[in-house]
Amino acid sequence: MDDDPMDERPPQQPEGKLIEQTLRQAGLTRRKAAEIINRSESHLRQVINGYTTPRAGRHIPVRARADALAWIAWNLEIAPGELEEAGRPDAAALLREYRGKPPLRATAAAAGDPPGPAWDIAEVRADLLEIAEDFERVGARMQQMVRRLEELERLAGGGTVSPG
Image (cartoon, rainbow, N blue to C red; front, side):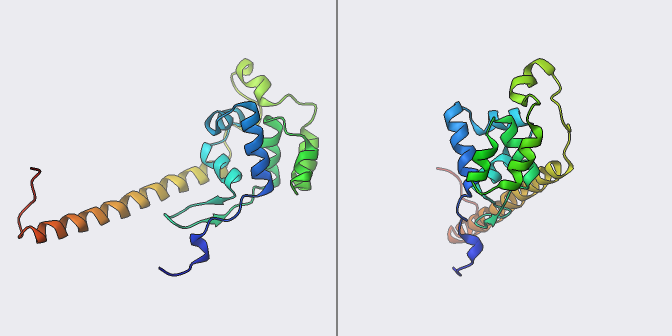
């Protein structure tokens, strides 16, 4: 196996640690938090982990856009100062602009249709790419299984192997 740097997981970014800590303190799962922030669980996972895995074993570093991170922080009630401490003054500045507006956590249940864009094109694109990557992994795994089955059948003398 070659030493491809993409095979190693990048370190978790400070903002990912902050979000993870906030979720733990609030008793929220990533799935519930994704619902609260009106984003996909995969997007939240990438921000928290600091990487994406487009193919099995490949880890590509991810750094959340300032607006995406501010949106997450606003809805999870993370303070701008905490984002600054995590090295994201860009997101902290945007978060300060959001202040005075109620976070989705406080309004989503009552409003039915949370404020802000219902569809984020980049988010939908990321979800579609993740689904395509899942299909790619499944297809590769199926090919491995077919090759293994063919090898077993060859070893069994050319016939099919029946459970027994």
